[in-house]
Image (cartoon, rainbow, N blue to C red; front, side, top):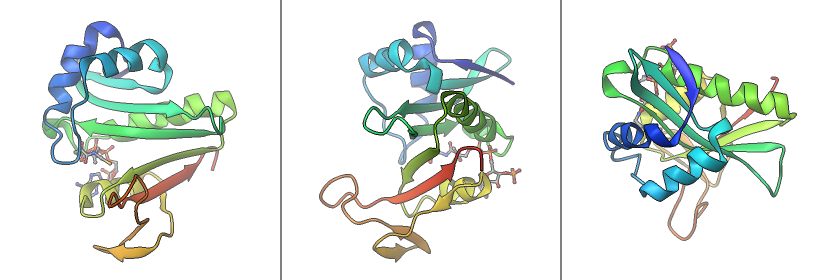
Length: 159
Ligand SMILES: CC(C)(COP(=O)(O)OP(=O)(O)OC[C@H]1O[C@@H](n2cnc3c(N)ncnc32)[C@H](O)[C@@H]1OP(=O)(O)O)[C@@H](O)C(=O)NCCC(=O)NCCS
């Protein structure tokens, strides 16, 4: 497996991968991916196997708190799950954050996404205490706007 930053020429392959990610991954526009490849590639790694894009993380370093990196979308091709693809991609983002002196990775997921919940715990994230528990997961109400409740996970960099 090769981990490499997102580049503009690989956007069509990334879009094909992310189109398989429903219901938890929603495809964004091509110009969004252009932006990620052009301005945020250091935190948007792809995983390649035999030249095919089989995994991706789209993440951003906060300008409000530059100590934090937010992971927006994480996706592994269904044929390549449980093979350490996300583990390798998140490690790449953590390594980058460590080089920058960042202190925290964080992300949100939906409470019923069991595979994601188990993955975040397996990768050393903790489920941040929220307002209520759904499906055994702590959830922050209205975290992403009215009615958009989310489970929040964090992992300290270096920990
Ligand atoms: C969640 C997702 C990204 C995990 O990707 P992955 O490449 O399969 O994850 P990894 O192989 O790196 O797994 C890392 C660890 O997470 C845990 N894990 C991952 N998937 C799991 C599952 N389905 N059940 C239980 N544990 C799981 C394991 O502890 C695993 O380590 P192990 O295999 O050594 O035991 C993948 O299932 C996916 O793409 N889902 C659809 C999109 C999505 O929901 N993205 C997240 C939105 S927040």
